[in-house]
Length: 263
Image (cartoon, rainbow, N blue to C red; front, side, top):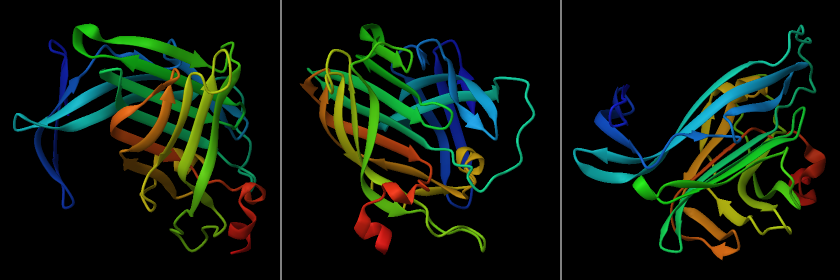
């Protein structure tokens, strides 16, 4: 893994039984994004300790052997305690409710890059970033957080559910997460900033991921697709090229559809 700061660009090589990549080039499409407006955000509370983060991101094109292979999202994030308080003992009620989405598409004839995430624990904490263009035309058009004046803060509704894999003998069997969602947010009226539906094929879970460990589960959804429709800033989204969805388990069975709860 290498940063070539003069370009800037990144290089990645992987050799493993599952995957081999020789010199994958990741070329940023614009300047580094400071997520949450200034890159310093609150992300929740874990065992009584508030957690804050420095969070920055690049949208990149992927090239392998001088051939374009698509688009990617490169996140850089560090977590730290937000207060010097002793953590509380683990509780059966511990639940880290986390949703994060990234979308690369086109609108009005130019690239549009969207990220949106929301954490409920100790919050809600949420952020929306919309960037447009690339190269010299790059610009971050919208950056909003829970501190913003909004007609409709970011809302995330799960439209289709799927079970979280049971990965250990003591893993609970009543955990679910989504595979299809509606994202909505409005500045002047509901939905005038984001009004999107997206989905990923079910079954895309990463085991032992950082946030799934925080949440007490051994698996976290890390789904990828190109399935998204709707509007950004009131105008239709076109030609989606990348949709990424990340979510922890949802232990709130009272929120699940009745027919799913009974099964």
